[in-house]
Image (cartoon, rainbow, N blue to C red; front, side, top):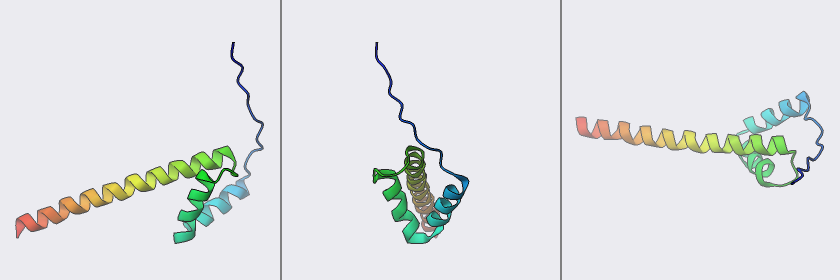
Length: 80
């Protein structure tokens, strides 16, 4: 029978989350910090997972933006 080992992590306070969101709102620094928190190894596991999920959503958003931009450009070119 396998035993699962759970590490005891302290909760992240509301103030820490507020500071995290404020830092991610800074254009270039926020993007860099998402990589640091997500893949740096020194972050709280829930903050690391949040950073990875945020990066994934950013990538999906950029891909959708490019796809719709190309489709719209194609409509403009076809209509000319």
